[in-house]
Length: 422
Image (tube, rainbow, N blue to C red; front, side):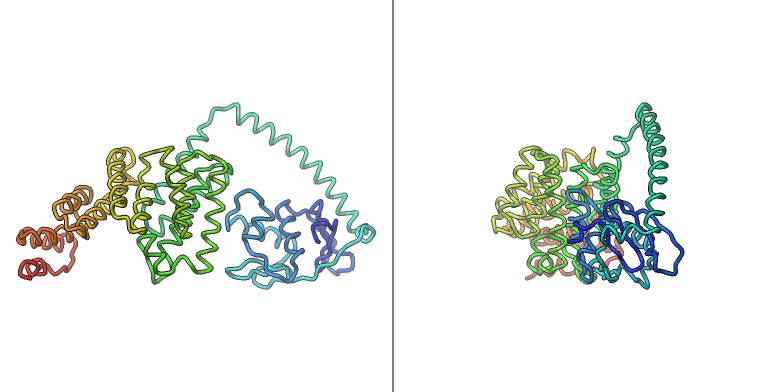
C-alpha cells in the first residue's frame, strides 16, 4: 500500500510522501531541483500512486483526500493542476497524470518503492536543506499571518452579513427554475462552503440544486417539469443521474449532521430521497421539516406531488392549497423566490378541481394564478376553457384573443366556440 511508504520514485522524481518534498532523481540530465507539494496535492498523489495505471474517480478522490468535508469539481481540478505543475507535467501531453473525461484521473508513470538509504542522496540532502529553510521562512510568515488575523478580528466586520447575502442570492437563483440560474446557485453555494465549510444551509442548497439539475434538465433534448414525469420517463435511473443523486445525498446528509433540526437540511434530504424513488422515507423527512417550520411552502409542494404520485388526489390538493396560502403570507418579504412558483401552483390546484368537474373552484384558482401573473399563458387558456364549458364563450374568446395580442401568440380562439357546440 502506497500510504505505508515513506517515499516513491515517480519517473524522474523522488517524492517523500510524509513531507511532500519532491526532487529530481540524481541520474536525470535535468538540472537539480526540488519543490514541496501542498498537503492536498501530496495526498492526491498518494491515492493515484496506490492505484497506478487505474482510473481514480472524483468521488474516490473526495472520499480519500477530503474525507468528511466538501470539495467541488473546481477544487479537484485546481489540486491536479498544482500537482502537475510540481511534476512539470502537461495536461495536453501528460507524462504523469492523465485526465479521463467524465471519469477521473490516472497515474500513467511507473511507481517504485524507495528505501530509506536510496533517498539519502546529495539531491535529497539538498532538498531537505531547502526544506528547512522553507520551514523557517514559513514560520516567520505564519507569525505575520497570525498578527494580521488578530488585527482582523479586533476590527468589527460584517462577514456573517456578507455570508448571509451570498446564501440569499444562491437561494434566489435556485428558485427561478431555469438552468442558468440553477448553475449560478451551485456556484454560490460552493463559494460559501469555501469560506464557511460547516454551513448546513449551503450543503442543503447544493444538494437541492444538484437534484433539480438532474430532475429537470435530463439532457439537451429533455426538459421535465415535475418529479413524477422525470421518474416515469426514466430520467433518474441512468448511471450519470444515480451518481449525481448519490453526491447530492452526501451533501444532504452532511447538512442534517451539522443541523439535525434544520427544516432546510431535512427538506434537502427528503428531496434527494424522493428523486431516488424512496417516497416513504422522503415523506418522513418532509414531515420532520414541517414540524420545525409548518409553513415551508417548498416542502408542502413536494408533499403534494408525492401524494399525487401515490394517487391520493384529496391529500395532494390539501398540500398544494396550504403551500399557496403560505406563499401568499410571505410573498411581500420573499417575492423573488415565490414569484416563479405561485401562479403555477394555483394553476395546478385549478387543474385538479377541473379534473373533478368542479369548474367553479377551478375558475377561482385560475384567476388566482392570473392575479399574480396576469399573462400566465397556460392559466389563461385553462380559464378560457372553463368559461367556454360554462357557456360564456364570448369571454373565453376575448381572453384568448387578448393573450394572442399581448404575447404575439397564435392560439386557436375558435376552439372555445366549438366547445359550446360539441
